[in-house]
Image (cartoon, rainbow, N blue to C red; front, side, top):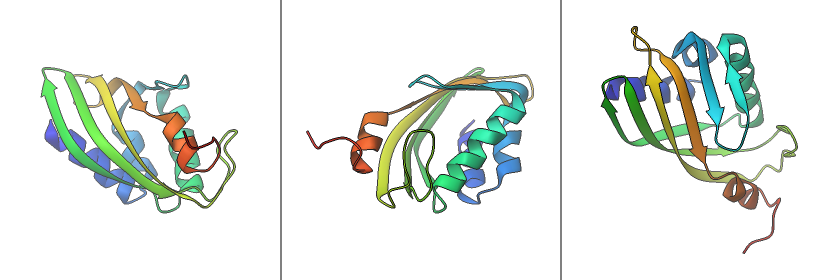
Length: 134
């Protein structure tokens, strides 16, 4: 399943929206631990397109990955500079380096059925200059 992680990072790093979306089952779900859930290819496509528009230099490095049957975890670092507003976050132009973990399950075809994306949104906002340094 490490190939699942490598494929995920490669698709994002190529900014290949179709390949990122195809990583999910047609009814797959991507849940952000901060609250938003994207269900199905159309919603996931919108999330990917917004992310790439906001961070035109977005890239990911996989730090570790493992599977246990249909379950997986991918530990990653995300890099980029937010140039365009995403939700309530204005495009500050500042660079971010954020660690995160995707934890989820795959379907019988090896596509993501559901995952939770755990990344530190407070630290993201801090690096963008939107919350005070602590």
